Image 1 (cartoon, each protein chain N blue to C red):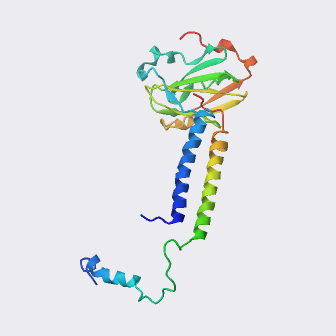
Image 2 (image 1 turned 90 degrees about the vertical axis):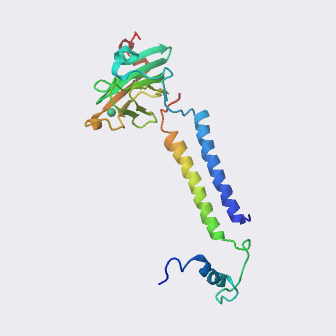
Image 3 (image 1 turned 180 degrees about the vertical axis):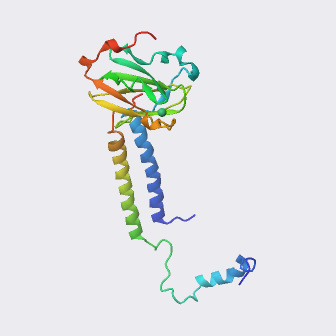
Length: 173
Length: 73
Ligand SMILES: [Cu+2]
């Protein structure tokens, strides 16, 4: 089949564009360390019975020198911890969030950041991040979860490591 | 009014041929496919393509990657 040379040029450019888009995403994943939320390796949990899981006591646990784990329950219509009293974390620490729901589908988006995941009953959404500076972030539920969905919000307070009160940490698992 | 059956391709074929024949008086010059060079179209497409690349880079590297903290694992 005969193809006009101009058409060859823009067929080439389209293929180049696909390569560029794919390349940038791979570059972001590998070099910029931009990952996506995952689900826990341990499989599913029973959403009707969170009392028998590590979510029985939602909160922050220290798991390493500068590493923390947050166990958070998103339920109609609050984040625990986060709503009412802010979730407090030290700046610069590696923080792994584990979020689950005992009732319906929720979402969590830390406003002004790329931290965003769905929260599905029976599954544990997991992601790791570092908050570099001491400031307060708002978080909202972004999956419609019921009549008061629009009020479902919370706060994350990032404090300088020297001011972080370790007595608020949970000890047991 | 012709019914759909009457206006089928076989009856239209001679007319379509006539359009392309030398009998058409409004054809000034015939050129081959390779001689047809729509440079303006190429320029506009090229400019749009460059804009697309620049905007994609801005969106990804500034609005997304620069919007930290991000999920790192
Ligand atoms: Cu919700």
